[in-house]
Length: 199
Length: 339
Image 1 (tube, each protein chain N blue to C red):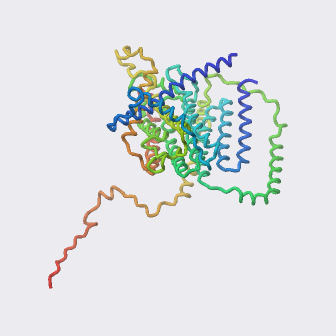
Image 2: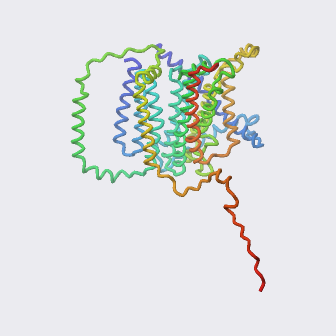
Image 3: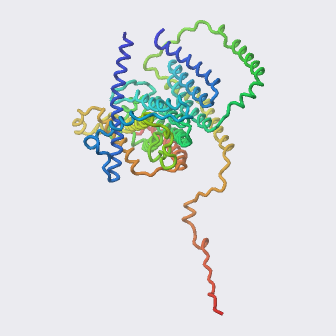
């Protein structure tokens, strides 16, 4: 077993263990941190597959941005786990049934019988750039699906903003242009009154 | 046997990079106190050694001797692991930084992407520290820092996209070599708006003044590291300064031609300065950016939090998007001498 293979096995074991810990950890913040570790370990596997662009983007997008936001939200919630567990016991029979069903489906679809002896993929030359290869494909052959995906994401952004944005009531921000254009006559009314006369 | 030899060789290379880096960090803290002192017409530290030159070492000894206090209700593991994460992310990014044409630990294809991915991890040290301390000031500082670094990462990423487009590469060495040809061939000129955006968001990413609301002393005591004492605090300090040095070197590499001589193509000066090794130019250039960090801290008052967010989302990101479109047209028209 050479170095690359041992790194692969260590990282796959880490992915499985951390993914398991995400599910069983009682504290949501610890769960989120284990998910971060899972992403990091799987990005190592991407890089071993010579897909360094995808591996780094996984770290950049999922670990650097998405999970930071996740943690951000989870840290502000003060979740009490004990009452959640009490209601959970009631659903154990149903949960077991679902688990068995999903396990059966998984085994029938991706069971060991589907995998023959797979040859190791050929290594690329040292100057092979996965980033360049991916870019060539995305912007030539798959240009239209790529653009469509971008537009769908844009629509999703606008939709979520319109759903969440309610506007600020009674905001007190001042507009400099309005302030400069103020006419003194609109603001101040000078009233001439005859002075009182002594009786 | 070969594998072991390669490993030993790599460790030696890492030491050669990390030891001077730590020295630079130590003397950046000294420079900060001296420079800001002079700017405010004070003397700065002058008690330990000549002109206070041994001050950083005295500080280090003091930090090492202090007791590390752990708050009672803090999450023990995460509380101790947070400063480690901060220092690790600040150190690991140095693996792909080239100091001269072939003076680099790992010359990988996606070098710039790697640096960007690693620096985006640095938010975790702060976030975990703030949460694990179980203190309201620490949590507030951590949340501020996380929101700020996510917002400015977008602008920074777009600025880097411009650099990648101009150089037609993600490899840092190739980006520097694409700028060869003298002072006006460097990317600060064709990418001027992106350069400014990168510089400003770099200040915000490293949580430095005027964007240092994550530790804003006047409002939340010291932000995310309120509960840290002794060397655990020292590690956060170390990570912050290493990130500053990294960003300064990155500014020099991406926009100021890295190790290239500024006199390339100038008739007599080019030959006259030919004996200067490239690393000297890189150190001089990044030294300027490092000085600018201290300069800004002495000059600008701290931004208000909503103004920081407004600057990031409504000013910097639109500028980068517009300039990337302009850049695409410029590259298509092959405007000399840059593209």
